[in-house]
Figure 1 (cartoon, rainbow, N blue to C red):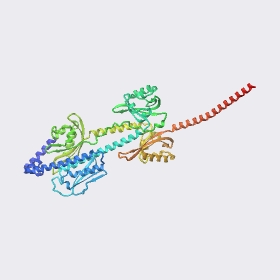
Figure 2 (tube, helix red, strand yellow; figure 1 turned 90 degrees about the vertical axis):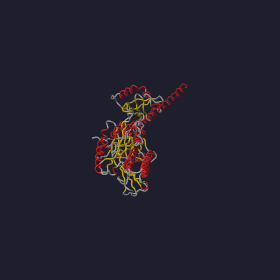
Figure 3 (cartoon, one colour; figure 1 turned 90 degrees about the horizontal axis):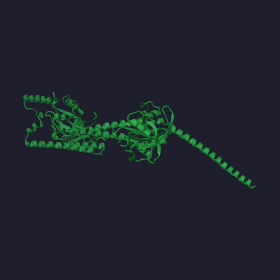
Figure 4 (cartoon, rainbow, N blue to C red; figure 1 turned 135 degrees about the vertical axis):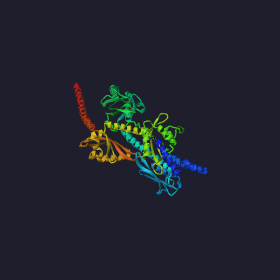
Length: 595
């Protein structure tokens, strides 16, 4: 049996019962029947009153929307503004008060007081209760059959709860996005390795370090053929490896080549290249390190370009009211916009609504409505709609069913529709961004460690595990990074942590570090402070370079240079004596000739 047939059968049963019992109860009359029994003046007065009440409700929701659109408002100010607006939309605003609790926030009107005349709704985000809205009347008023609060007042509070869910969810997403962007930006800003992305033979991205290595400005590299920046002697090798990688062949990722600088000189570099997906296409991600000064190649590798599209600041939200008995459906203007319809194009029935749903989702929506109407289950669902122009959108719906005085017969269902298409796209883009960053992080040849403000390790890459002798992340996470700095370097390391906390970063500081098994290695560390969306310090990200072999080479070179200087001193002294001896012999030969 369809829903319409169920409702008609329920109506028929009720009508037969009414006929057998006489006149129907006033409480079960429709609004039209009630108005029909009073005088014209009284009807006008009732209609004017109803109109005034709806105008108050719309004005309240409009002001809440305006508050939510402000970018300069704090969460506390926003909630205070909303709670102060709610009483103005109620039937008796002069004796009404309200309170909103939302996680750690608790705001209330100046006249707030708990009484017996209470209306409350929960604020729910992702199936988790995060707060509530409470409305109280401070004095008793004549109650209708629904209690001290009218159905429209209940619907208003329900709608405001949904506004809070939407606004708070948007704030959470923006805070997470800002934290993510700051974390990744700190890594890329501190790197001294050149990073470029090649696609279709063209440089699509070049970071500051790569520009500095070659001596070019961004507009001189980005968008140009990458072979123009490769030294002639390296072009054949580079082109062969790039072409093979682009078609999926296995080639050594690390090799040496020379780049052509702007001044015409050649710079020997070590290249680490790998295939990635960039803007929906295959691309070559290349790390460039100056092997004449390895000290400058110690910064973090991070995501090259954040392709995450910014989610819509405020999702559009509309309300609906379905009279189940008469099968009349009322939509707010916002729902018409979401569905891409004009009000004169919609039949204002449940059936017309079902026709707007994507064919593959209709059964799921109908089942959810049936369970809410006939089994009193919560109505919460996400589904697709198809606009008249063929565009598909994703909407989130929630609703509540009102039953008759006996709690058996469904008479009304009110709810909200929210367009969540952009949010879904933003969530997917953020996940792709996180995955892209993870690949860049793991491909870094240098150890990268993320710690809390006390130095406890909360994240690291494979290079860190390998360098310090850990077998897995589980073994390293939770340890204090200072434990792996030698005792004679720890005081200096603490001082550098304080400098990073105050200045935001430290760069290229050298320590004697300890591996897990106690081996001493020479290291060079750069670290940056990571802050949350509000600018509060949150963690450190450190990039460590093992410079043990480089230091040994430098020491050997210094020894050779000193030895050369000593040799030069001996050689030069001997040559001077030979010159002096030759001069004396020449003088003797002259004297003998004169004799």
